[in-house]
Length: 180
Image 1 (cartoon, rainbow, N blue to C red):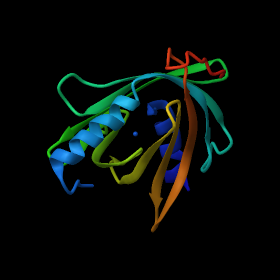
Image 2: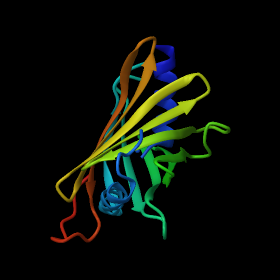
Image 3: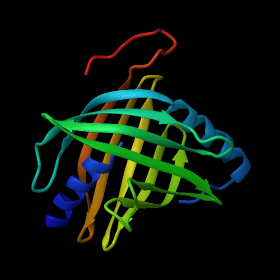
Image 4: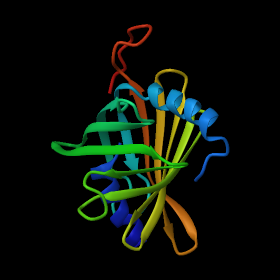
């Protein structure tokens, strides 16, 4: 479980996100998914495994899409009590998959995104840092709810280490503001 707790701490400070069968049709669906992430998101999260299990935090993230590319950037901060940690993640379509990084990538203090897949309202990204491998999943529910989780491989099992429930708080179609 040491690996799980290491990634939980790393992913908390970094958080926020396969191949596609028909690239042109899928790219349109993928672009639609990433456009749905645009806006300001806020909400609670929790480390659900490892040394810091039970640690609760709150994030506020700004979702944008890059001009002329299929992908997204989530940029903001996560807070535990009075402590705040910057968060930045960028995902961009490269060929038939996705590449990107959390913070400065695996060469620094972050994680690399080495592959990914968009399936309707859900995205799954493979993440890597040295010998640590895992996945980040994000699912959009309706127009204003996004669930995010991070899991890492421990021995032969995938162990979920982070869970987040974010709500859109910017001026949406109904102008509602979610409370943190």
